[in-house]
Structure formats: C-alpha cells, structure tokens
Amino acid sequence: MKQVKGASSLFVNTQLSPLEHFKWQHEYAAFSVSRWDRHKIATYINNQKEHHAAGTIKSQLELPPLKDVRP
Image 1 (cartoon, one colour):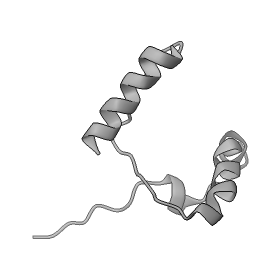
Image 2: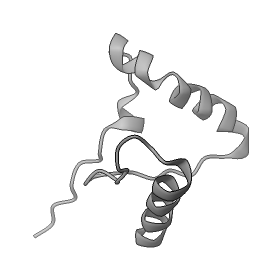
Image 3: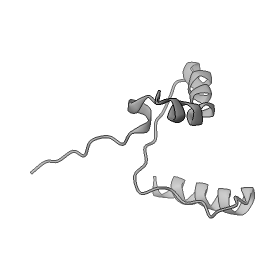
Image 4: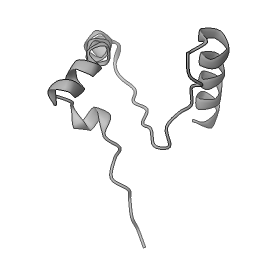
C-alpha cells in the first residue's frame, strides 16, 4: 500500500497539477470490486458530494473500519 500511495501522490502532484498539494489522509481504505460492479461504484463516487450534502452516504464505503483492538 505504501508504494501505491507514493506513486499515486507523485502522479497527481506532477502530472495533474492540483491547485493544492495532494496527499493521502491519515486513514484510508482500499477496496477491490468485481468488474460487474465498476459502473455502480463509479456512479457512487461521481455523486459523492451530493451524498455528503444529503446525508445519504454508505458508511461501509466511506467510514474507516473500527480498529481491531487485541491484548
């Protein structure tokens, strides 16, 4: 994951030239999805601002998982 984050940050900052320096937030999640669900997932991501504004986010997709606390 460290290599993915590093490579994607470098790409965004050097190739896409965002207005602000891009960096990953402290907590993040990565998911794999089947090719059959790609359109549904892309649609959800494209409408993410609307989901947040309306309070209709899917918590399982956007909230960090609970920490696994073991003694």
